[in-house]
Length: 122
Length: 122
DNA sequence: CTTTATAATCGTTAATTTGCGATTAACTTA
DNA sequence: TAAGTTAATCGCAAATTAACGATTATAAAG
Image (cartoon, rainbow over all chains, first blue to last red; front, side, top):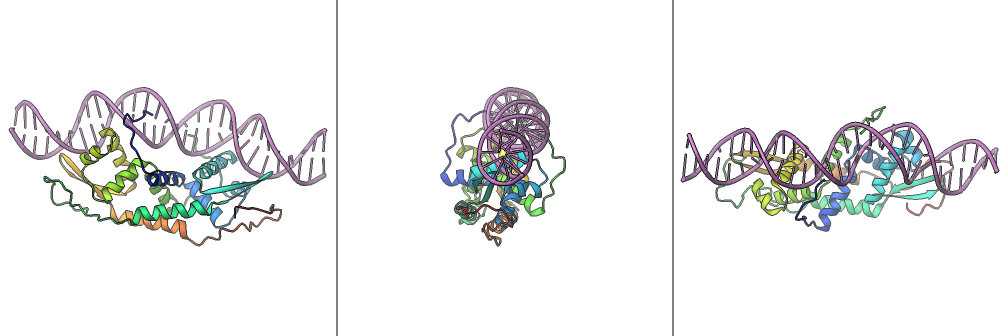
């Protein structure tokens, strides 16, 4: 895609939130995280048994979750044991929580003189 | 992309979470939501003044947020007033909160007899 | 040493996302 | 009626994502 001419600068919070959100933006990755977190399984082979997708595809999703920092893997050849990365899990929890709760007014008192009236939504 | 042969079935929770997460997966959409939620602005034109991106691009991101249900827009031609969709905002808040907090063990007592030992991560 | 099991990686294809400028639509105002 | 303002949509290009099968790598087991 085309790069913006004047790059928008984002804060660390914004970037982190976007990275975590992107990791959660595919239902199969949510499924994987739920399985790992609920301890229903741990090894990739178990995920491939529970999720009807090609092994390579699941491996790809695991990589995405790894890169987002939400899980960690320990190699025990020929198996690899995955689990939730607790630190980042809590970090993500906090960031999402903060995002949704930080003091909002949710009003619509826009500081615009010619603001139309009768806005039902707010 | 190729469609999976045996389609994976996801729960409503999983689907919803993925939809909300996808909406939050781009930093500029997080910025827009923060601006709308903090009442720093309301009309698209104000967003275009605050965010150095083409008007069409911002309009596109607004559409994505609309379709995810996180915002709502009221047409007041030639302006459109956007604001947070409070109901879905709270719904998203609850779903993310539930996802990160639902009773997890985070242990690694995998029910696999030949599980390798010494897993540092869990 | 060969086979087996596990999981990452490669190569490919198709779909989606992101960005832009240009155009269009809709309503106000002159 | 004409001009102006605002924002959606179109059309395009580039990048990324998602899925697959095939291959490769690694270590254990025979």
